Image 1 (spheres, one colour):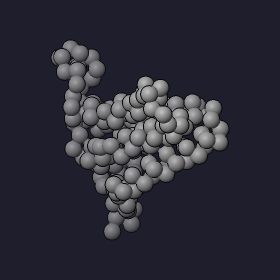
Image 2 (cartoon, helix red, strand yellow):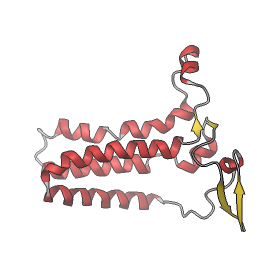
Image 3 (cartoon, helix red, strand yellow):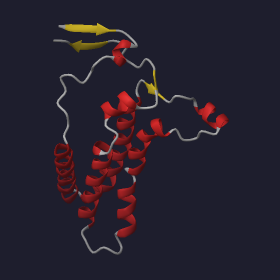
Image 4 (cartoon, one colour):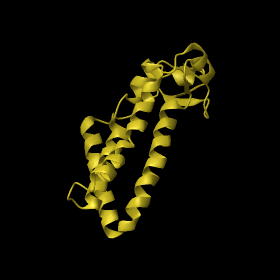
Length: 166
């Protein structure tokens, strides 16, 4: 039986009923697999490492932010934050920590490469794996953040959800 729920009930209703949870080991092994694929592709075409990694960052960060923030806005506007002096709202701004930290592995590789005597493609693959783990495995979990985050719910692109009941 399918129920069509309009806004705001579609946002508040259960959406995680038939979804299999992505466990810790699933996240670890998909990150290792993505890093291995990156290593294989960049060892075949070395010049692609400088194009593939930034493309991953420039698509992965907005993807995560879109998944988390679509339909879930901060409790106070940017002007209100500046006016009241509340520049950081921990309950909402926690979703921006992982995308900001995702840039650290490549910065670390670029700074450490002259002192570490390893293959550059291997270091880039390790940085890619770390970035993957930060973007897709670092908390807060999507369901946890949507249920307990400090945000306000607004209509998004889709205003009706199909929920299978029973």
